[in-house]
Length: 421
Image (cartoon, rainbow, N blue to C red; front, side):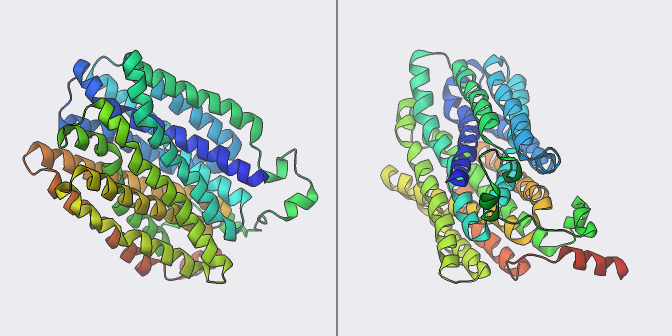
């Protein structure tokens, strides 16, 4: 049970990260009364977050590999919590952009460190379920954000939203410091307990010295990074723009957004859990890891084109379609983040996960900027949703092409062969 409590602990951190990043999109209407924002400026704020997030996602993976999971997550959480609180001090668009950039720097290290924790504590037939629980934190944070922000705005200034959510991250840090240790150092584990955990893989000297550039020699790295680039382009648009779409296209106010915007995020949480459980279930039923991961990925991608219908549907059906898209996306995301643990040795899982997250964030930046431009130049939401509807299907085809088999890579042999040639 200890390792599942650890999964819940890490999931709570991811929940806080999604609560923090949703504060600005949900509160944007209240913020705009003090700091007016166009669609392009709103895109720029999200791009500031994602630009820092992209580079720190890559750097954060390396940081967690260097400092270790326990110390790495402490540093990361403290930094992003203070960055979140700093939004409440902003007086201008430029100050908001700086705070958003700093928040992205902090949060970028979250998922690579979470992936490393999964590699430390869970065997291959449990990793997808564990990652589903952890990834479910994204939905918890995003579900809590709309109603929590609506309640805060009823009684306090919008600035208090950022002070309160920043404080939650600092409280989690104390919980993490008290509770998390790597398996070999955990005070509650004996020798018999350690035998039940994933073995520490004995790596050759060549494998231990693998650098980032070496990882880019593998087509599997490029394939997963490209797939994440495409799928997260759509995801970050849905995540950051759903409240604004409801304000702009459906004439919602903050109370109405608070009442319904949590529903797709709840569906996302179910997608995290079911996607991870389904893949693990297939492995337990003696399907190969390769087949189990790809079946789950394919089914997740298959529902995403339905977002094409959202602008033409009545609002109740539109929320249902958003919910299905959020469900499919987070089932997909769970599988994509499990793939590094299936393919690469634990010593480089953080670095690989960082590259994957970097690709996803860059996709979010480019498509977010395109969305802001299109919306400010008369194209409307229908055009943007049409583009987003294609991304997951293309991403799945990329994975099928570049990851012919989901199984541990013989990295030392491959690198030695390339060096000798």
